[in-house]
Image: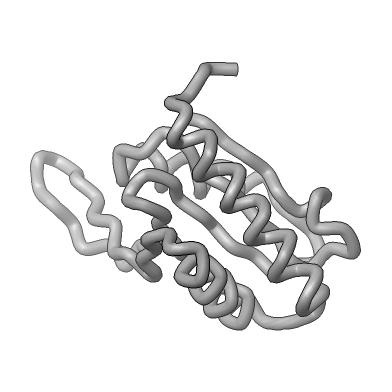
Length: 128
């Protein structure tokens, strides 16, 4: 595994801790939008900068195309979070996050599925 900057690793650890706290408080079974709002609140309580629903343009043929793609959360302008609340994780979700990382020019992302009994089973870390 490629080594990331220490600050990025500390931030990644805070992201995982935040997901654990949100999941342990709410449990599975809610809408993705609820988990997103609670993750934002958790980051704010930790003084971690977070942006939600960030538009991601696509460049094609030398032109920027408005595609409607949006990052669920962007933490400290460096880590992309793609949140899910689904029964089954599909391989396309990994591909989606890797594409978002490429388009946003970020190297680290987390795919977090809150619809699991144990959140550790719902967190996947991907590096581009």
